[in-house]
Length: 180
Image 1 (spheres, rainbow, N blue to C red):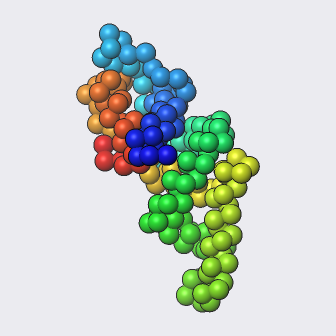
Image 2: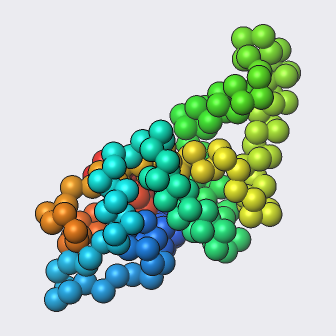
């Protein structure tokens, strides 16, 4: 798969997720007179409450949409997601440290062999999504880290998104670059 194909796959991969978050639909919105589309009241409520993992409503909304999205993906798209997650070294390191803490393991006291063993087990949790469609909390956290800024996109109008804003959002998320 060349770079251009990857961009197309990423766009096709993230558009339904963006639509679930923004419009509560997995299909593309209808832009009124090709200029703007109404945002869902659930998204607006989540946006109104600053995105914060301590904020149960917003976390629940994001997690609900993410799980719905991840469960419906084809094996090809699950493979792409798994590759994207496992190739992001910085985020994988953060997630692995979280995994160690969750399992009461202190990296300082582990031997190199134990760290490799724990990392392999951690990678198996990630790969379970690829093979069985099982979404681990670490895949959820990857998306939360990467996409939380979807609740902070700059909009001309408070209750709708312009076609240009929508396309920019999908492009940024498709590149896994959330500088919106």
